[in-house]
Length: 631
Image (tube, rainbow, N blue to C red):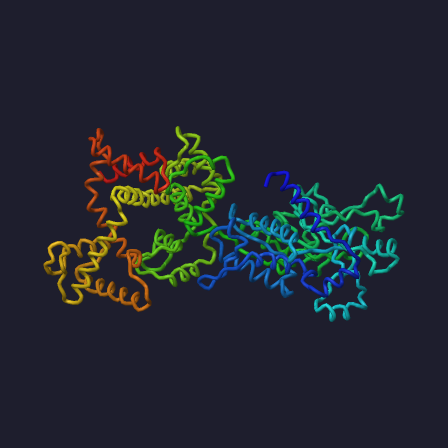
C-alpha cells in the first residue's frame, strides 16, 4: 500500500469515527453498553488491560509497557493494581493525585507519555469510544444533562452512577439553543488528542512571578464582554485552561511540587471533590486523572514544608526506581541508541553489557547476607544461577532495601558517553573497552557526582573490566573450538556413561575396541574440577546427576547438554582448558604461519557470522584475548 492509499484509508477511518446523534440516542447506547460512560480512571485501566496481561512468578506483566519500559515490572504492577485498578472500581484512591517519584531518566516521563498516547489510541477503538456534548469546551459527559432529581432513576436503569454537573457553557447552551429540551441536545464521538487539546493536557510551571492561574482554569475573553455585558456570562469566558481541556482524560503536571501554592489548591479541590473554581462561576466539575512526577529531593523538600500538609494525604506516591537487571538495562540503551544518530554505528557484543554492569552496580546496595557481594547480587537479579542461592533469596534481598535503585548512574549518561566514544574512534565500531574508557573519562564532567561517587564508580568500572575479561576469553575459546556444540555434547555423553558405570559399580564398553574398562576416573575428575567439585564431594555430585536423569525420565523428558547448568559449565571449561595453549600461541603470533593464519581467519569468520562481530571488533577481540591468555 503506497502513501496515497494509506492517506485514503486514514480518511475512511476518521469518517468511521464520526458519530453524531441526540442525547436520546446516546442514552440508548449507554443502556446497551454502560462502559461507554466510564470515568477517566476506569478508561485508563481498561486501556492498559486491553493490551494483555501476562502472569509469571506470581507477578503481572502488562504488555502495554513492554516495548518501552524495561526492568520496572514490580513498579508498574504496583502502579496499575494499587492505583488504576482500585480507582477504576471507584475506590477512594481515584480522589488522589498520582505522583511518580524517582531519579532522573528513570522512566517517569516515559510512563506518563505512554499513558497519554495509549489513551489517545484507545479512544479511537470501539471499546474505548468517548462521547461528549457537542459544542462543550470541556468535552463533557452527556449524562450530566440529566437533572439531579431524575438521576436516581437513570442510575437504576443504566446500572452506573452519574457524577458531576453541567459546565457553565453547557448550561447556557441548553437554555439558549435547545430551550431546555435535554433529549434534543446533540452528542458526538470525540477522539482524545493532546495536539487538538481534547481530553489530554500538560501543565509545566514557569517563573512564579509571571505564571498565571488562567493557564490552569481558563480566562475572561475581554473582547466579548461588551457583547454579553458581564464577566460572569460563560459566553465571555474561555474554558481553555489545562484543567478544562484535560476533562475526560489525563492531565500531566510536570514538576508539580515546584508550583506556586495557588495552583496546588486547585488541584486539591479537583482531586478530592471532582471540581475546581474558575472565574465568577460556581464550582466546575471535571473528571480527569492527574499525574505528576518529580525527583526524590524535591519530594522531601515538599514534605518538609508544613504549609503543604493538606496536600500530603491527597497524593499517592509511586516510587519509580532505576532498573536493576543488566539484561533490561541493555535493552534501555538499545532503545535510546535507536532514537539517536548512533543507530548506524556497529556496537560490538558485550559493549552495552559492560556499561550496564557499571550502571547496575552503582544502583545496588551492599547486602548483609553471608556470602553475598554486589557482583553476585547483580547476577542473581538478572536471573543467573549463583552458587547455592535460590530465587527466594532474590526476594529477601529486595526486601532488605526497599529504596534500592533510587540512586546511581542514569541511562542517558551512558548513552552520552557512548556518543563521546564514537567521536574519538577512527572506525564506526565501538567495543567494550571503548565504552569503559568513555565512562571513566566522563566522570569529572558529571555535575552530580561527588568525589566519593567517582571513587565507587571507578571501582565498578574495574569490576566490569574483570567480568569482561572472562567473557572475552570464553568468546574466543568458543570460536576456536571447531564444532563446539558437537564436541561439548560428545564429551557430555562420555562423562554420563562413566558416571553411570561408576555409580552402578559397572564397567564401560570401549566404542572402538569393544573391550570393557573401568570408569575413567581421570576424565571425570578433569571435568568436575573445573567447577570446584572436591574429591570428597565427587560421589554426591555424580549421584545427583543420576537422580536428575531419573527425574527427567519419569516426566518423559530427555536429559541433555542444557539440562544441568553446572555440568554444562564444567564441560565448556574443560574444552576451553584443552584448547588454551593453541589459542594463546595463535592469537599472540606476530607473524602467524599459514596454519595459524587460516585458523585465525576461520575464527574471525565464525565471530562475524555467528556472534554479531564485525571484522574490526573481531580482530580487536582476538588481540585482547591473546594478551589475557599470555598473562
